[in-house]
Length: 209
Image 1 (cartoon, helix red, strand yellow):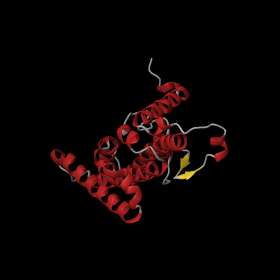
Image 2 (cartoon, rainbow, N blue to C red; image 1 turned 180 degrees about the vertical axis):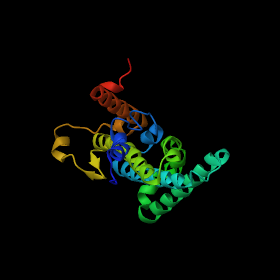
Image 3 (tube, one colour; image 1 turned 90 degrees about the vertical axis):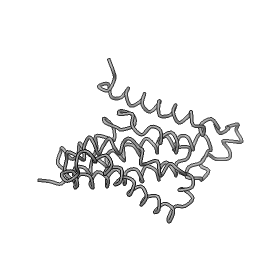
């Protein structure tokens, strides 16, 4: 029996498109709007959430038969909080500037509904390997949306990517002006809405009758 069976491939790849946690399940939208004014914090948040979801899923899956049902939410929160604390300390040590840009939103990973959703819906009923793949898939699905939103908001709002100017000066000399509205919070919501519209137009089965 292979490590990546057809079922496992679906668990890993499904959240990247057809079952994306942000544009299909409408989970994690708050943080997707809050940290995407620039590409770098969007990417770091995507990696952080992916790591936390994946390892939280694995830990809860390993403990699922020993956790009393009446305290399972408390145990889940303790596991998530411990992982988020580790991620926060790693960012402070190795990416301090980005950690400052993310501010309180690193700590608020604890409240990201993708985490509790995957633990409750998947990790409590499946093995560690499948739970790890589910966590990675949903984290990457969430991360893809963050990176797309961060890319367009920084490019159109500031003319930069990862802080480096990518729009030539000649374009500005010709009359181009950065769209300052793109770095304001409402434009994050509009950008996500456009992504949802494009995604649903390409996946007719997701459209409501």
